[in-house]
Length: 283
Image (cartoon, rainbow, N blue to C red; front, side):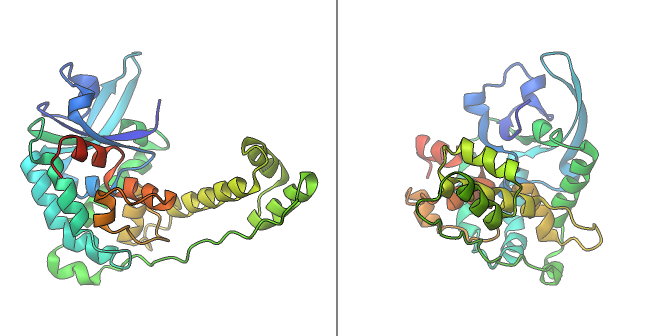
């Protein structure tokens, strides 16, 4: 099973249409997808009461429990707009999200269906389904916070970026392995395996370990009592909280090419969304 989430808009009035509705056309009804995470603006379209639990049977006959949200297109758009003050407060150190929301909303100017749902089956079964369910419920509950209470929510810190040590020239073999072990804190076997996968390129190996460390930090579970609202949403969306959001004008003009910015962009709105906007000429 792959590990992707999908944003689906169709006329099927229930969750998991890919498994349960023969009329689904992925090229038309799947508006976006994301690897390993659920983009932040997708989450903001829904509330906890939109969640549905169902039993799904895959093409091989294996049965899964699915928990996903579904609502009408109109309600999803209204709820996304209503979530903007909460999003801007929680992530105010990372930039304003109105421009992203405005661009994202254009996906639904001419929707291919009456309902919007997230297909989360693959994501949910990456680990413990019960833990995922609790995290998802908590994340969607954040957007039900009364406007008067938003100021009481703690906002996410703009974390210091991780810096990579300069790689000395001419390091090879054991010397290269020793340098990477000291720089990353990883064991010898892990360093040798990664260096081999990077064809000996030490800079690429360092970048990989940096990315891996950031992934672990973003998804790290905290004690539920001490967990902040932004922590739950950042973990669900896979956000890199060491970077500000790239300017929306640069995003829409195709001027964003930094790998970390592109990854954060996918965590905000999903893969393929901007391409669809451009293809359908609704930017």
